[in-house]
Length: 190
Image (cartoon, rainbow, N blue to C red; front, side):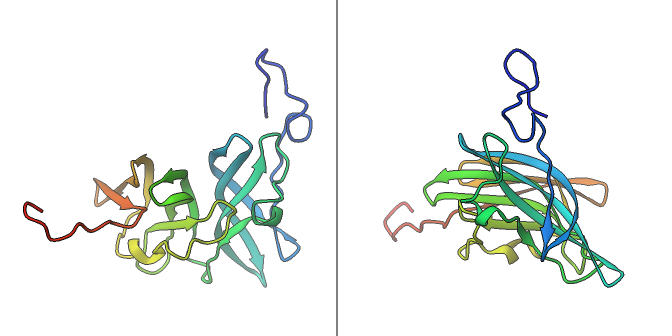
């Protein structure tokens, strides 16, 4: 629900101050849970989380991102008003985005997400997207494939994301580089 500066419901946001998330995949409604909201620009909000698809008696949990305008309407310029799914193909692979960041640095404008997957050997799920929701082909999603724990929290640090997790009753912290590393020439002192 949205409120104005006087603390009253902002009727101009969404549907009388309420943003209802109705996700569909191939015309079928999905159960969804929002984990994080990102202000990408002054005109666009991103919601991230998980969506459950029921298919032939089985359930598949996908991670998703969906764009909305600052007035709570679906954003036509973000993936054509459609959610961007990071799909699972196995029932036991529960995917969800935990945090996301709208970055604008030396590598340009982009979206980076961190979350979890529970199937196979992976725990940490990472994603890179362009500002319009398209998958960023230069982002190595498999770069975190050997990290067998899930994200608890994350924050930006320059052109990187610090990701906090837990494994074997101990805290784990990694620095996820989100921009290409620029190699310096072989000059003395380097």
